[in-house]
Amino acid sequence: MSTLTTQLDSAELKTRITRFQEVHEEILAQVRRVIVGQQEVLDQILISLFVGGHCLITGLPGTAKTLMVRTIAQTLGLVFKRIQFTPDLMPSDITGTDIIEEDTATGHRTWTFVPGPIFANVLLADEINRTPPKTQSALLEAMQELSVTVRGNHYEISRPFFVLATQNPIELEGTYPLPEAQLDRFLFNTLLDYLSADEEMQVIDLTTTTHVAQADPVTNAEEIVGFQQLVRMVPVAESVARYAVDLVRATRPSDPGAPDFVRKYVNFGGSVRAAQFLVLAAKARALMRRRYHVAYDDVAALVSPVLRHRLLLNFYAESDRLKPDDILRRLLDAKPAPRGD
Image (cartoon, rainbow, N blue to C red; front, top):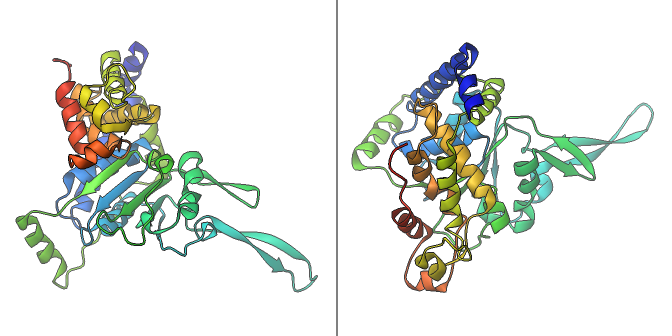
């Protein structure tokens, strides 16, 4: 802790922090040219980016999920690719495949790897729950290891690599719910809701005239990788980290510290990865708010997006019409942050 604080006092690091905050503000300004409202969603996507995690965006049709992702990719100056997931999509359609090429002069044939769309910086996995588990799992290695294996050959994916997957929460026909192992690899499950009436009027003004809104790049891949390292250097007090760990452990019905309502309604709670992501995301949130240390509020504010897709509720919760967010709100009430910082 003291070493990190000393590091944060160095002139070079202060320059990097200033640049981080400048880029964050510039990204917001550029995205605001195209996207109206959805500040919380935008914050969570940027936290995912600065942490180096992946984000699952759950929203109804027509809520600008795809437009938001494409706009952010433009603003970051990164390579953007989109995969439209369908029931007949194969793993090789994502990772790429080997083809046989013949030299016309010698007649010699060789295997050549043709990279798939997964070789990008920002990958939009559109409607990820529309494809079978075999194809969904093609993303697992890439999301966790930043690499893919095709016919026994190992191919690295360039950093930064950032998967933004979207799913529609109301269409169940012909969909394949994501397996828990894959859900756990997403830093956030971000909920995209409808805009307010005033914000919808702004959308009408932006999109029904001849004006075409466009976002300009404000950073690059190398700088973003540096920001990800910078976020990890933000100090977190042991008491704040302990609060994050206690909250995650309290979602597990087998844990002695779990409240009665968790034991009643939850089958499985958050993993160790959930605690890691909660602390990392809190570090990014603190830095985005021009603070050089993590506060209890940073942890509490991110509990729902980090944990809502990691709770597996039981029949009692379903019969009482409870959702993971309801359990998490009760958990924050039962385990409030300690006073002070």
